[in-house]
Amino acid sequence: MRGVAFWFFFSAALYVAVGMAFGIYMAASHDHQLAPVHGHLNLIGWVSMAIFGMFYQLVPRAAESRLAKVHFALATLGLWLIVPGIALAMQGRTEALAQAGSLVTIAAMLLFVFIVARSRLPAG
Picture 1 (tube, rainbow, N blue to C red):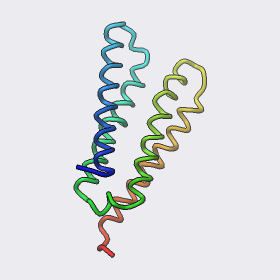
Picture 2 (picture 1 turned 180 degrees about the vertical axis):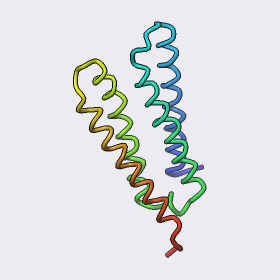
Picture 3 (picture 1 turned 30 degrees about the vertical axis):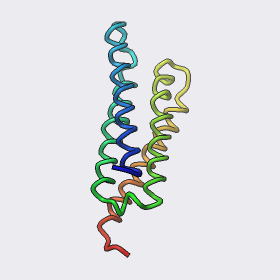
Picture 4 (picture 1 turned 45 degrees about the vertical axis):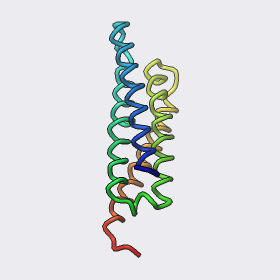
């Protein structure tokens, strides 16, 4: 595995390790107030990133496109914004980061929809 597929998978493994550590911390401290942060980190960071990586591994032509790299950048930025953003929103500090992260994350997903749809077209 290489290229964007590798980076999606590597990121997914990193995010799930962080998500699991955060889950263990919450369990040990008996403070589950930030469980939605943990959930979003695992769902977007682990599940979505791994699925993206699998797609790009299975469809190398899509993985070699410039859009795949843009997709990785958007998906990563979205996660990096939404996870701390949810924590800040839950603490009543600001919702701006969570909102920005949500918009970047949906943009990344819509780009992925386009990339998947485009992969059905003949090469050329």
